[in-house]
Image 1 (cartoon, rainbow, N blue to C red):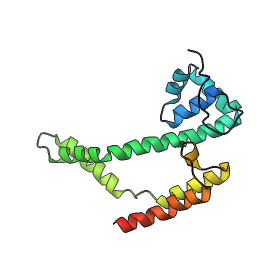
Image 2 (tube, rainbow, N blue to C red; image 1 turned 90 degrees about the horizontal axis):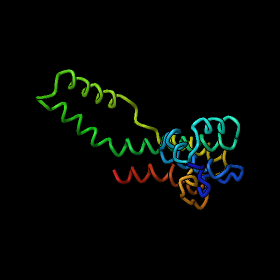
Image 3 (cartoon, rainbow, N blue to C red; image 1 turned 90 degrees about the vertical axis):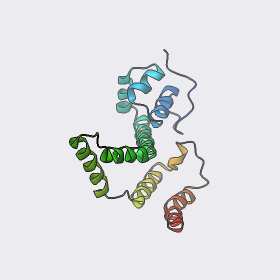
Image 4 (cartoon, helix red, strand yellow; image 1 turned 45 degrees about the vertical axis):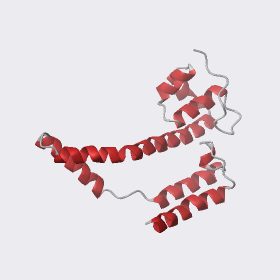
Length: 167
């Protein structure tokens, strides 16, 4: 399969070729490097070579990998209630072995003991990346924001207020 030539631009960097833009988009959607390379019709080592030799690609790949991590996190968040239900069923099941029930209980205790994620840390990281790259992170996801400051202010100051009002 030949590299794709009709890929939409993933970033505003015009020095990247269509295959590079497509790879970045696929990575941001959650595909592995191997999957993305196969979909575009290149060898996975080509991606590694681009990462080492094309600074713009390396920078945009870092963005894409962060978006990939966010996509995987979102999937985990969506599956969490089902996972909690399974753990609850294991704890209550007379058919579950004591070892399995112990592992389920330890998993729950481990989650309960961990600190909840900090929205302020996420907002700080987002603001730093936006300042460094001069664009909002939502641009990569196809979201158009009026201004950087409006987007940041809305997501980092009004969201916790809205959560507090809803509680």
